[in-house]
Image (cartoon, rainbow, N blue to C red; front, side, top):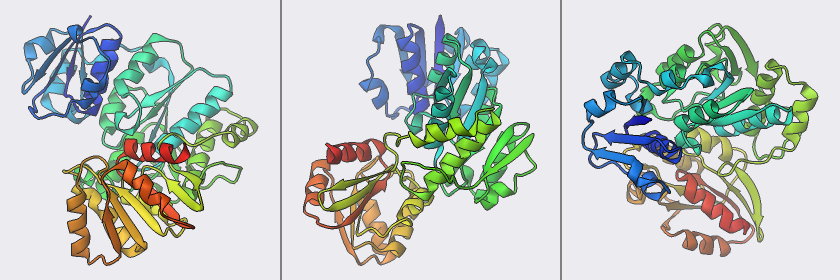
Length: 407
């Protein structure tokens, strides 16, 4: 079977890897000559099955494929419409996944934890559940989830849906229930405003059961949008996770699973044993220091953690070069004013840009740039009786720092 992959961002590379590992002949292309292909470079794949083209799309090869996977960022472009019109879109070829009861979890923050909570509750209740989705969130991408769902028998599918891929996921999956954790300031280069983002979420939950955060004013506006609307607040049971925001995630999972017919007793037992997802917020002791660590790549996520406690030292990873919309993290840090702020290269080395931005803000506290993870660990070892937060952008590096502190 010959399958094409159009667009080689994170999702496109993940799709290519998933298809090659299953033995498909794959033609993958991207019009960007400078595309970062590190996921493909690092993967163990059979290069003989891959026909890779950078700088253009060969439409003849694409339209002669048995199926075509399109990057979510291209879903509303002409090339995607042409592929759909020809009946080649991958979710129109592989369709078994559309018969599975499907729960989508989206929002600005809390998607991964809430998705895993729902997965654990349903699995503990004895159901066969497939979990996956958003390649940028730590999963293997939407295509990998689609392929797994078509290969085996499942009672439920749980999808983490990135807020930038709502239209794409609405087409690819037959979604029954949507959990929206919150609407916040992230990807504003795509959404342009919270009002527009809210409208996009409204379109996504239309005709579906919607589980919405009652603490979010924007989501309250969508009360009459879904076929049925349930609101969640804060979980009042036992939870072994840091932060009030995780109590909201747990309550979202509880409400969703109650709607699916799972008993409260079963849900409570599952949530009691739930542990933090790798890369998400954890609390640990390191010598005399208390450390909270986790991916907080937008200002709302950062605020949710740092408002919980007063941290003496804040260690923050930087975003990609083009993601200047995430620099508002620094506006919050300026107001928070920790005793010491450490900046490290998270996704890209934009540490100089961060320093320049802070200088313009008039930041006058202790500010340091540490580029090496081992040097960050050494710096932490010099501290005593401090509360330290490690976060920002760069999930893999934050996870690596955390693992070194634990071990």
